[in-house]
Image (cartoon, rainbow, N blue to C red; front, side):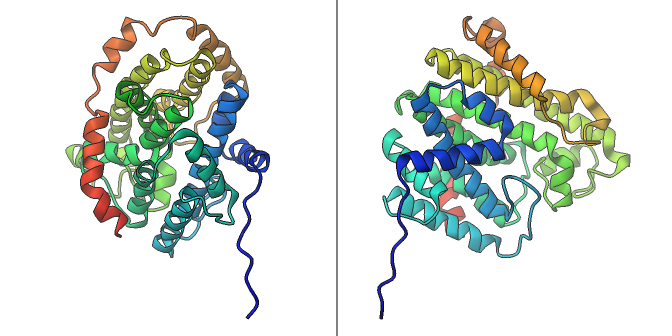
Length: 334
């Protein structure tokens, strides 16, 4: 029987080039902000992003965050991304440059299986058709799919794994970003049979589960979105405090991403009942404006207003990790 050649791993420059293409196609906002990092950090950010994008696309049967494909076989796809991630972290070629790139950046920055498992758990929840019952459930989901990524990004930027407070601030930025995703994509998620707004929130406003996009409930939905945006602001403020501790270019990039992506949530909230007439996004001109604004902000301390807003947070990294740890064994055994 002839031997079967094992997949080969691309060179580092080839993996970086692949990752650069992935972020360029997958997120114009993050791509713009990432160019503010120094070259070494930028390449690592791209490599980590490419893995996140590949996991998301594989789990949801989509291409570069586009329209969701058929969700048949979702559990099998998540099992595959778990296998490829474990292979990459073990230094074994996977045949997929996005996963091989993860193995490379993990070795360079100390990213562990536990870090990756916390992210993968979010895809497992989606594959199980999970819905958040409480605000805590919603925030736990945000931690899995974005907050945990923020922690990994902080490691990529050279934050010490022992610097828990700064890692928490990085997690907070991921939480704010995911809440922006949730409020922006309410209509698209509903069309795909998903809802990430807590059931308890809907019940409190007499909205039957699954009916929140009906025109008769639009005002209540606007109130729910306003509540989610208020939570996002507290975590965004916390992230700005953490960014002040980073090197200048890292700080500039993080603040740019905060402004560009946080602007999506602000647009949705400002649009009120018309928020889902079209998909909210930041224009190229607005991105340029945030690049300039964040440069100026990088020269100043975060300010007392950030401290006051951040103090309103109800969800801390230790609590989210505790929730995740209690459920991880069950989630990853699914």
